[in-house]
Length: 283
Image (cartoon, rainbow, N blue to C red; front, top):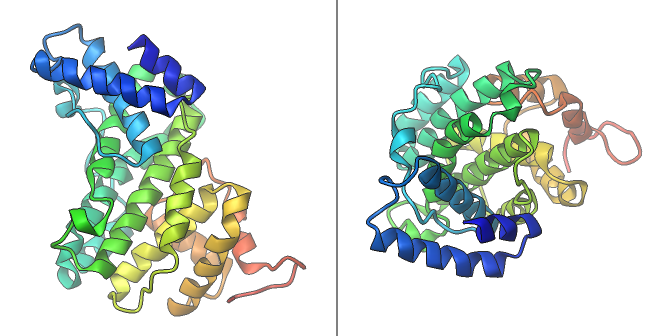
């Protein structure tokens, strides 16, 4: 386990994979780690999630027993606008079930993070943060990453699902940054998101277009500067499609769905302003 922690710190992902292969073999030989010291399952779970997000892999290990019934999260802490949007989306696009579950799981985590944004103590309790972030991370990372793994979902819906998945993982990466955890996955996550922008959104219902827009703006807000140009073009195109004409509308819509308080809303102003400082509503 110590070697794996070093591997993540120095970002030697090839060696990390070798060590994780060995740890996975031990896990199966011992029929799990639940009988071990309580910290072993938790550490194994967390380093697995770190690598899965970085390397675009599925988690190797299940959620530890001590996290399965966590009561730290109020599962009903979901914005009313998001509730309504997901309810309507379920009616018109039932194939998007994983999208809706991800967002319902993310909402209480974001609400807790926002309430504790200025609470220094909250961000220095690693065991609590692993508990808060771990379960939703595991679910998001377990969602299919390619169409071949999700043959029952129509491709246009799959693309939105993948965008929402990556946007959620980017939010989780930002929360890891706030907690001083490893968050180098933000770059690879942005790379994967940008690749999806070439896919058309014409064949999806309006509810999924709104969730797609949320994912694009979330990615734009969290992306490093070198990734933002591509996201900016698509954000403007989506705004035109959704008849969004002001930064106030964007900010209001994002906050009504899901928004991290650690992200300065001013960044959304740049969606409407071109490089020469002029207002630009579409690209």
